[in-house]
Image 1 (cartoon, protein in one colour):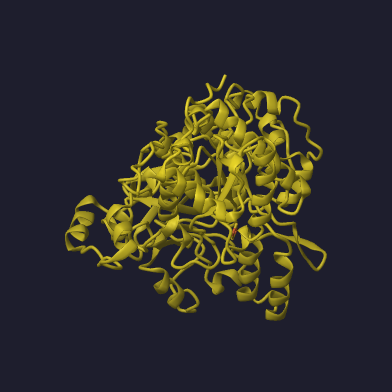
Image 2: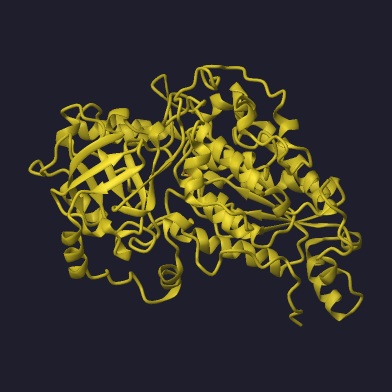
Length: 575
Ligand code: FES
């Protein structure tokens, strides 16, 4: 089904020759205690590790890598672990997203430059998943991904609490006067109490579901908690399987087909996944050469119900999702919406894996006849305010605000927002539309997760918990609200978002997929003529590379020169 053993492995070009260069390649490796027989032509399996103590969600990855190695050795391969840039969501400034493409370049070039025949990708925290997949896809070797797994549920005063989601709700409660600072600080120690990534259906869990639905991860990948022994068993078996995949020449492009992307969109919608997936899946499709556009999110997602009752859309957390049956139960429940003939890294079809998938808790994983939300799709809205599109996640929004007309309250930067949002004299009410400018890929730079602007205290105290918010930024997958994101073109590119002024009327109609700035065209043209682009944040280094080459959100915010791939040809000898 999946091809023939390649006549010659890439690694043979390094380790095969009985000459000076072969001596160099083998002899230095032997300083690690490797015997002659590991250079006998067996598949060399790279283990691409994003371990870092600065990426706490991936801090257990050295243990996972060891388990992968066991499997590789057992199957007759030769494992070589190597580090790549690790992107930690909570610490990196100005935003980890700025460095996603950089990390993908690191992965791509590290794989191609070394004697690697197949690669196991270890990812967990949000951006580590797309960066590794994108980089590996541009090489198109046999590859599979192991997600690090979610943390155990947070526990605070007898309640389950979720990463991110409850940070936002607790900080709003402190600002609204319903939670003390002492209680807030106590919750800090209760939220993240085991190894793993965020245990809400935030971006990391969404990415882990994406990996499993694409078929590029092993069944069970999405939901086993990081500390569950089955996560380590999965890693062991993935190591074994990777050796077989090299022998079968089962490359990424054989797995990541259009059908795989369609399965991923539907799965992400069905679990109420993060809007960040929109960008990452488009960028990944661009690397592997699968036609896949922003609009596909909307069309493929229509009619897909949200089946999973997880925060931020619902009540439960990833540990509950695992015990309820995890992603296979969701994919089975989606019935004909899932392409069952799509190939998985196991060498089997998706249908074979999910046909008997059990569900043990119908509160956590609903049926299609009793969904959490009947329509879970990520909606793509367009109009003069977003000619290239913007996205909104109805499952995280307030139904009454999905069709809304209100006056703009404009913030020209996130600093402007922070400076004014607590001002009791700020002119804002329950009908207002909050607009945030210059937070797109180029403008910030890096498109930070600030689109879910907190509400002003004076409205919170009135019991108002949601307003329409519009920006060219992203939103944390753990956040919620009627938040229109990824507006393209962004303000820094002279998009209409840059032209909005306080008091302008804005109309959002999610059902009609419409986002309209109700200002006469002549007035918008006058404002555009007076607009000057902001100065670039830096004229050197990576920031310059980024702002010169980043594409807009509708194209996944990849670099223009990284779209596509360069294969895994063997580079020239260095000696
Ligand atoms: Fe790392 Fe959420 S901060 S996954």
